Length: 290
Ligand code: MF3
Ligand code: CO
Ligand code: CO
Image (cartoon, rainbow, N blue to C red):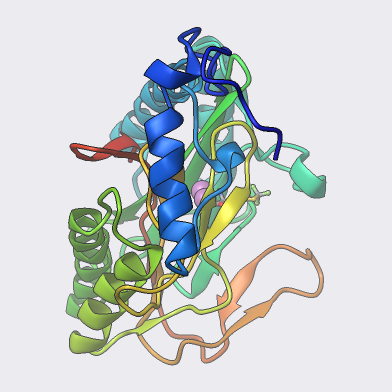
């Protein structure tokens, strides 16, 4: 790494001199590294201007999910949800990040019942009473990304489905309490998996959360199963998603061969997911999108 002079401008882009900005912070990181900790690169630590931009993308992303919550009901198709998300995103000055992302064909992911994630909107799939659905919205505003998803229950659902949806949300809220500066990424996965297992459900291992903000998917990878005190150190300025996929049955998942996207539970059991975009600050987590 290039050594920055004490009087040079700080790498964070604040415009302040390094010695009055991140010098002490970098020394602290170096000390942790010497002690054997895995510390984030500077590229995983957002500058104040980037945080401002990502926060704004989060506001827009929340508005889109609020609108989904107002309109979603049995009888509409997942394609209708796609149109709703696409048009709202454009109207609010954003770009739907999923559209054309690595060939993904739509503007939102809609994952129903045994679909774990990456369900593709379809005019033939009409929402039915009893369905549980995850709607995953990612919005680009002025080049900055925010990523969040919520579950919706269509009318009356089974007690098991209701519990799965509720417990999955509760696991993210519990994990948030552990998303503190100078803690560890493993604390988050531990909080989620302990709570989920205690409730008789399982956690998908293969798909995790991710750094987000300047791109759709950045480092670090966020496991939803973990051990406290292990994995990367959490540092102020890091922004990543927490997005556990929780199955009512076995944790194994399979990908649809024909569309190349849809992920199902292997045993056909129900799956739920909630996703937040979270900023780590000295004063605790700030949820930028939910
Ligand atoms: N929004 C998903 C996530 O939480 C990613 C969807 S990728 C897509 O990471 F291409 F399917 F949109
Ligand atoms: Co995500
Ligand atoms: Co998402």
